[in-house]
Image 1 (cartoon, chains in turn cyan, blue):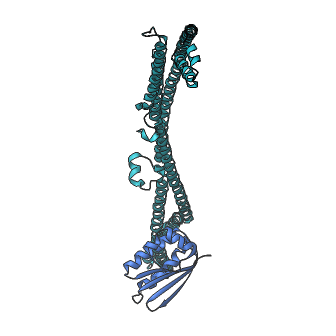
Image 2 (cartoon, one colour; image 1 turned 180 degrees about the vertical axis):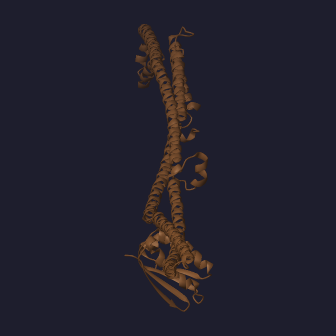
Length: 411
Length: 103
């Protein structure tokens, strides 16, 4: 309307400028004034009607927008709810699976540790037994030991045999020595016997001589006749004495012969006793030496074996310890699983919080534009609230730093 | 081969050289070979040379032990010389290397 008036004034001014005062006078005549009035009224009416129309259209648009925003917020809410529900069910399954992993790990690790520990024990026991067995045979100091536990080592046995043989050799030689001195005594006895026999020979000669003399005397006595009768008797007596002497002499001789025989037999027996071949001793000595050498070789092999076994046993123990230590990853994994669990929990909480953000009508206003703006504002608030929650999760102590194995203590 | 003995006397030492089998049957011969030097006051050492001995048994060892006793009783010295081969082995197994002076 102001524009209309301004245009009118401009028109008037224009005409006045041209100096066409008649036109100007006619412009302000009642007829034209009336026309102007009508036109102006008509224009006003049209103007206000258009404005009202525009206002109404605006009102309708705002309402439509309001409805659409309402729909969007409701759909968003539903989406969040669905998202939350779906994620939560996934999270729950994850947590169940994590629990299963924990159980499986714990079970397996417990069993492995038991198994490794008993393996170690058995290896140690094996080592003990091996040592026991070999120490019996490699022990050089057997003299004292064998008395105590009644166990004689191979080496000890060989040595004992060797010592026994030495004693036997000594005994043999002693016997021979005694035997040889007996032989010498036998010789002396033989010499004595020979002496006796030669003396006996003398006696026998004397006896023979006496016999002859007696015979001569008897002949002379016979020649002397009666006077020689006494002499003849004496001669006969002498002869019979001589015969007796011979008889004794024979007895002695036969005894001496028998002594001679005995001595000879004794010598034969002593020969057998004294003459022992020494080769048996030589052979035994060689064998003992060979056996001791073999024992030495066996001992060396045993010692080597023992050393090797000890080495292996140590190695087994070392490996078992490494395995058991490695199994302690259980702590690491349990802690990691715990962290995963917490993360899942945090996510769940975030989802729930987002889902719980109120997006429905609260304090509805009559004015749809205000109402619409409020709704938008509420929507924006909701979204920023959700963003805040998500931001909080980022700074949650659970998600603090990247966990590395080194941060977690192992026993 | 039966035992044979040769005796050499020089500078107060009697060297009795044995050869052949030294066994029981050698008894009288051996005894008579050392009896004289043993009772000779000029002789200080008796040396029994076994270099040519082919066989030695326990009776020979017994005889040597008897000789050792008698030499000790006569306060003279006894040496076993030229011990080698089986003879030496036998003497060693009988521990004679500890009882006698071996040369």
